[in-house]
Length: 210
Image 1 (spheres, rainbow, N blue to C red):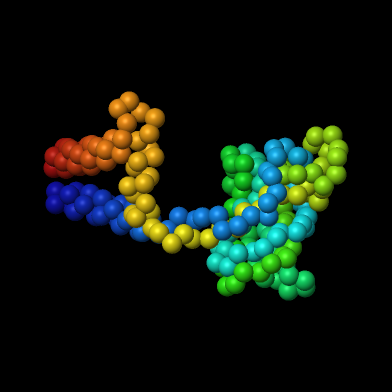
Image 2 (cartoon, helix red, strand yellow; image 1 turned 30 degrees about the vertical axis):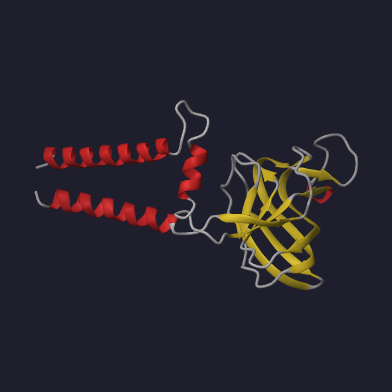
């Protein structure tokens, strides 16, 4: 059955292209913050609420904004960044995110640095409590605050200048720490073993289906 090895080769080629394309992109980096400490559990909300706060300086190149909100199953989050009455950028994140202490919302990429912005966040309805992490605007018992009463930590994200490929040796070095034996060579050895297992598994599949 000539179609079996052809289909297998095509699938492996698509995986290789996907991995190569992903690694050729730069990771996102933090370009700036609003300098608010993300103290945990400053408040909770059932969603369907909105709040605005000073966002400090919005760096040029920002393509996503990370907010200190956490949930098991996060609701829809929309935000806009304003300078006076002008909307500098906006974006939204669909419901379904979760298991994180923050949520990153993609926004229209910002062309230039803009100081003194205001960030307004709108949270959609949710079936469970959404945890608000940040600094309370006023003293109150824990959990008694809503989105309007807490200063969220805001992080402005943009693509870095180097791709994952160029960071491979540095990533391998850090992944190799804390082991016995340790070293970047462990990571590359594991990669070689993974490729060898994939090759043997592919050979076995082709032989069994002939």
